[in-house]
Length: 178
Picture 1 (cartoon, rainbow, N blue to C red):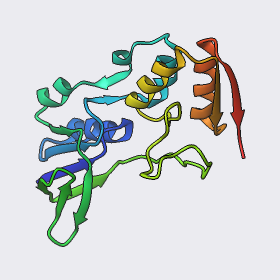
Picture 2: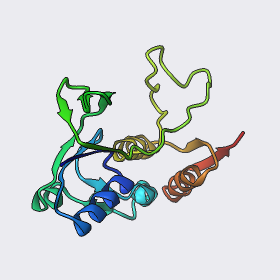
Picture 3: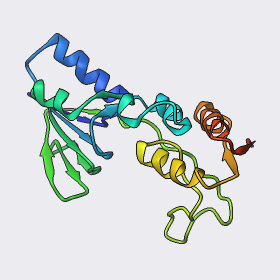
Picture 4: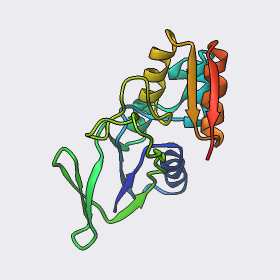
């Protein structure tokens, strides 16, 4: 039985762990749009603050999957699902078949419609970023080193954690919440 897990975050990883502990009847493939193994997204604020190294938030390396016979495809997203044929198409054109499909993709960040935040193509202008992934964290840390001030939009857990981390880097931080 082919089990395809879409999402290599904490939930997807934990699901795979549970399946592996309970049975060996599945051929498991995990697809994640971020490169590398699973990591604890909650700890990214410590990485941004400079108190934790990025590799220290990893909860399952690529080797962890290989050692358990789990096929891991990272750096590629699912672009479509065909439930009738039981296939998914990846954004690189590859097609994967499954018997069971689990979507563990997490959430997406809300980007407010603020003028001057995005280019016409939807990408962020310099100095603006989401705080959701390891790549986001690295980008923010890169420009925060030469910044004096930061504005964090959103006072949810991740927003407040980002504000704490940036304040810990010596920036004057303003948090904006609707």
